Length: 245
Image 1 (cartoon, rainbow, N blue to C red):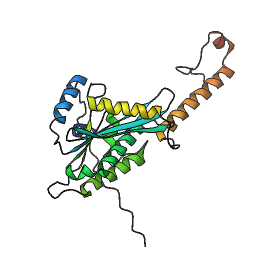
Image 2 (spheres, one colour):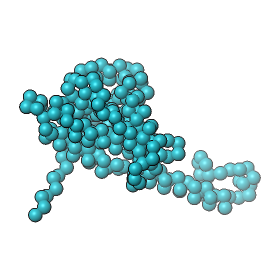
Image 3 (spheres, rainbow, N blue to C red):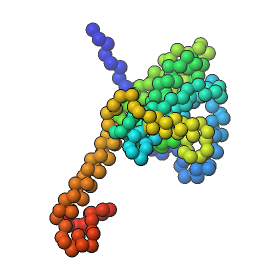
Image 4 (spheres, rainbow, N blue to C red):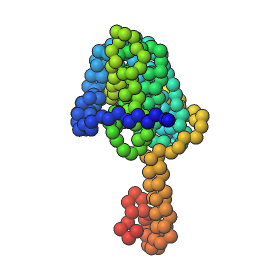
């Protein structure tokens, strides 16, 4: 008889303000202040802990990719570029890159020395949702991340190493933080690469596509029914549709 699948770990839904406080969100600070605060905080992380910096990127032609680097004892020991092709938004690949980085870290032999696993990323919305119940685009990825977070304390570790937890930290983008810049480069390389296999489109990507198709159809219809006086003045439905349509 097959075992009953384990229930997803439950995380109490907290207010957005509390969630932002937990991850070190900007909360009114300037980029420079946030960057200085992050680097000061980074210095307080024990060297035995694993720190993952992840990022996502989307090219002009719609191809998307993710990337991450991993550090421990001030040494970079992980780096990966992930290609997802078309059908993903930056939000989606940011979430997937964070999950991939966490999976790589928990599988690495030196995870037994780490108390906590830190996931650092510059997408505020993704950072807020990683450990919180949510609905919407990439919901499956967020659920997988929560399951992985529940598994971290159960990993193989040394007797003196505490169980710890997975922690999320927001990092300001384009703030000359070397590790975040390295993750950004890995993500751009992933976006420019050919994906190994087709990926299913995300909810956010399908929503964008549907909106684009709807606007295109409305534009075509307007061109067919627009009064000649409107056509002479080259009045179109963009960026705002006339009330007659």
